Image (cartoon, rainbow, N blue to C red; front, side, top):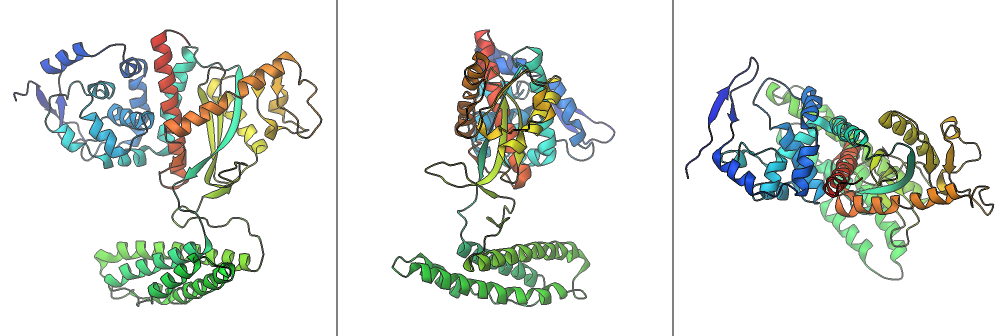
Length: 465
């Protein structure tokens, strides 16, 4: 195959040599065969890529190897959540789909034989870590401002509701947390031993496995066996914890300077694991004594996860974080806030109103929410809104219940439920697979961007709002 792309090299003061591709004859021919009314091509023309690149430049350094194009990385993450795909599937589809290439701005690099090899799924992970939640929020601001400028978002009507976003964690039980915490500590101690630091620790692998299997057996005395097994696992965990001080003290003189950073990192990791296991032991002992504790550890690799009860029949408890969603009357998501606690709906209303006013530049004229947001003493921000439709709690109905504006806002408020459903079923907000609470914020923001851009492109094709 003859490559028709002209490739030159540029060099800045702090940047290594990087290839710059010019438009080729092949890419021009392919562009003429693409449908200009395709959803992705319409969206690519709508998005202000230059402003997005300018906003994300502070997250990049001029030294070292040149990073991937910002439009390429933003486009790939949008496509990932738009079509509910993994990073590996996104990279694979990019090399097969011409519309994806055009959307990500790869027209000039279409005939290069090296760009597909250089792009790996881990590149998307590195990009998300690079910009973090702050960077994605900047992308969201750019697109939201465009939607407001085109008058697709209506700042007058504010509809708000909350939902729970689960984390990708196992179902929490006392036995599994105790066993997993002990095994994590034993593994970290083993890594230190390989570096010649600390003393060996008994793993209790065989006894721990036997205790777990006894807990799983069915029978009339299962509850008694569960309590007995938990006490055994607590004993194994405590015996392992007693050896941790000796492990942390060892290796101060014998450690090589080259390995010192690695040893310090493992010791810091061991201290965190020890603190978590102590919390698990304390909450298990309290449960065995019939004492209820708040702030339980529900996952060792995601300690911020909380239990959220939304009253669902098939899923009484969801383990993750709480998300507040604000939409306008046209169905666009204007704002969202994430909480690493099971905050009451009423406590989430004030931040939602503040974010709405900050994002739209003006407070809403109408507010619709469910009875979970009702209070007998509304805040000053709620009082300034002319029309508020929030049903009262209890049997006594709201005095404006039968008024047209109240009924209209309640009907519109019900429209937020399918929006949340689409965010979860279509755009990966059903389960957060990104690390930490920062990952939860990333997941929600990318899902919101996928929903808003999809709606934007479809409405633009139809020529309406």
